[in-house]
Image (cartoon, rainbow, N blue to C red):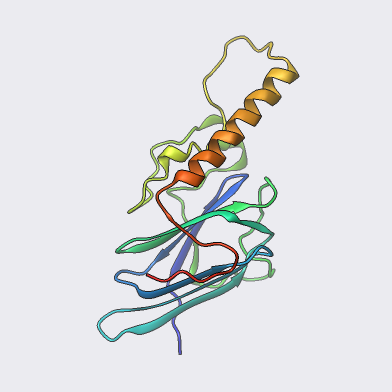
Length: 182
């Protein structure tokens, strides 16, 4: 019988941060499907006990732009949402959230806070996603007379920068439902 490691999550409008706490994980298998199905399995400990997570995320995700990193204490998954919108929960199923799923308050930002905070000094454990510039905002401009065209151009440039930085992030890509092992 498999056990469930702790799964901590946080979100922004366009991404999810999922951290699986499982020190010394071996035989790690990750699978993410576009409709939001997420599967993780590994063994850990001196007795090589099996651990597993099999959940359906609230909405669809972009598998090709999602990244995973397997560290010595945690497995971190940066999942790009298909649509840039806030989810009111992590799981598709309504009702009580499983006990192994927790909010990652160190990374959590509320919808209104995302506009105020850019990047921040959040601790991402063994991996540094700070270079991804995932927050909104940017530099403060005292002149509020930006035209709609200027705002749209800035948003497009920010989206392009995020995409480029996600592509170059030092992470193990997991795409097209293919399992990655470490």
